Image (cartoon, rainbow, N blue to C red; front, top):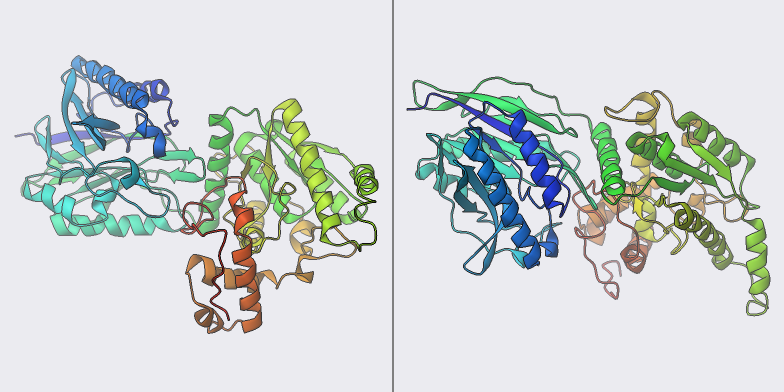
Amino acid sequence: MVDRYRIALAQLNPVMGDIAGNLKAARAARAQAAGADVILFSELFIVGYSPEDLVLKPALQDDARAAVEELAKDTADGGPAVLIGTPWVEEGKLYNAVALLDGGRIAGVTFKHDLPNYGVFDEKRVFAAGPLPEPMMVRGVSLGVPICEDIWGQGAADALAQLGAEILCVPNGSPFEAGKEDVRLKLAAARVQETGLPLIYLNQLGGQDEVVYDGASFVLNADQAIAAALPGWETKVVITEWTRGADTKWVCAPGEKFVAEDRSAQVYHAMMLGLRDYVNKNRFPGVVLGLSGGIDSAISAAVAVDALGANRVRCVMLPSRYTSRESLEDADACARMLGVAYETIEIERAVAALGETLAAPFAGTQADTTEENIQSRLRGVILMAISNKFGPMVLTTGNKSEMSVGYATLYGDMCGGYNVLKDIYKTEVFALSRWRNQNSPAGALGPQGRVIPERIIDKPPSAELKPDQTDQDSLPPYDILDGILECLVERECSFEQTVAKGYDPATVKRVEHLLYISEYKRRQAPPGVKISPRNFGRDRRYPITNAFRDAR
């Protein structure tokens, strides 16, 4: 009977569809894990997660199978066996699978049983559900390998325990949401309590379009105590040491235990990683953004510098006649604090030229939001021209509060390729800005210390599209607006439930109306980092044409 065992955990950052690159990363991790009995990779590692409809392509399925077979041959060297996530076609059905590679061959395959079909997940659209899993014998130890969603219910883990599994090894593609680490830990602890088995929770790392995977893998012993906790936001290959006790139960020796961060640190790291991977994996040389002297563009620039380095961030001030001297000074100060390339391109001549072009059709009308939006759209044209000419992706800077109520201009400030604030309400924008001025995030490439002038954080927000304008001219104060949106968007509260929180009925009615009529704008918005359980996009799918109003 085997009494000592070593399991390597590969918390890595695969690139979607880069099968050759992911195979290379798997081989490098296996080399790092020399001396381990087996190395565990995350869900669908060989192709990346989540592949959506890409996984339906037969060519991708064939290439993934070939890569797994190639990796299997490596295991003839006597090094660690491999448990790796891969799509798998069997008897005409496509499965989300984990393959066991050992002795130079594919020694076994297990399939995901419980397919998630909510939030960002659409696995029932592409995969067939496998049967309840059975343990796999790996060098004398019976390992249960429930895949991600399989441990969100009791069935798969119970089935594995009843069939003699000794350790549960769970490969995951679990997206980041602020505060989710407690949910994962409680979930894993419940499976440990029910089965009496220790559990390894291995999570993917990296940004994939709007979704960010934070890693933060961990190991629980059978007493539900944390034996090891890997850091979030870092690639890591760790070998865990296991010993069979007198009661025949396996116990993981104590390892590193990284402490979970506070919310602001988590969210900021998620924004950094999401932007860094989106830019790098799509091979943009960097980003360009409009630096207005306001808080949204300032924190967006700070995240960009921390994620990519100042040499890959270009900031442009695009003043009009309504831009205040204070904004000009604040944008200049922010650019100097961040150390970015910075320039000023005035838009007044372009505004005047377009005004002359539209003089005849607009004759006899009063200036309104049309003229305000022209300024915003001209700024978008200029930023896109810089992007087209020199290659950097335009980073948009609108926040979730604005996108909720349509306080954004299509083809203007919404113009661009990615948005780190897309799932961040305005009140949290302020909190994150203060946090960044007091903290230097781990792995950040930007300067330490303050990066945003205090005046930007303290002054009333304004789009500066007309004289003496502030956001609160047309919106409720952000603490009230965000509280109402928290009810309507995050919790799907009714009108009555929202008013019962103490909000003015007329204000709630107006916000609900703005929320619904702005859906068409959100459909055309660029992708952005998912932070909450209800981001605009795949989490919250509302029709554009919609006559329903709860507030009557």
